[in-house]
Length: 287
Image (cartoon, helix red, strand yellow):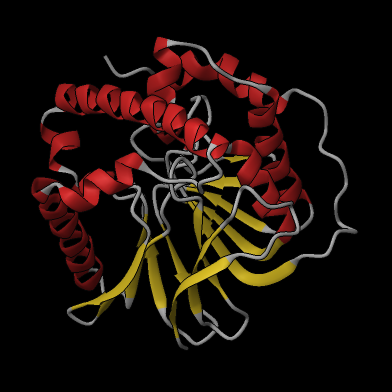
């Protein structure tokens, strides 16, 4: 049965409690017009909270969109996991809102409990079902998590839960493999991302999802779409619609950013470096 908002009241209180974040306004940081992140999955061991904190300290923006699955309610129902670093992420987001950044939270399927709070604000963070972001050069981007276009989520939720358990197993195995790789002096490597690239059915699912989301954006009259959900950062043109997926903070440690002139870019954060580390630019769409 789907849990109502009241069932997660202790979770909300826990996120808002905790020690306040240190003031890091004096630290050097790149500034963008907008930053889009999704699929952080706070409440799971796979969440790379420290990496995200490093990224947020090094990058600031006028707009910050949290594009779903920020908190993993599915996993928290099964097992409570909430270390201080996850509280620190929430405190950092609340601080951004207090400092004048427009922060918009669009719930996904894993934090669907927050859909019971649509239209409300928490510490200055707006909760919306979706949003439309207008870039500096006038393009209208539809911002949505994307789970509404996942047939498994909509038609066979039990199968989605099974897949979530298998995914968690893959992530645990991935952590062991990367611990071994680190001792051997090898860089981070994502097993699940590798499987997504190699398994034909996974590739077909990703393609179908991307096309469906782009078609919906076209039908709504938008120039492009920003989504998450499938944990695969991508930016490409699909039949005249700009499709942007900002990736995740479990595997790829990626974000979509809009420069002050409207250019869009996918960034990947190197968690092995310090909080002042440079990002790796992978894809860019000019204004």
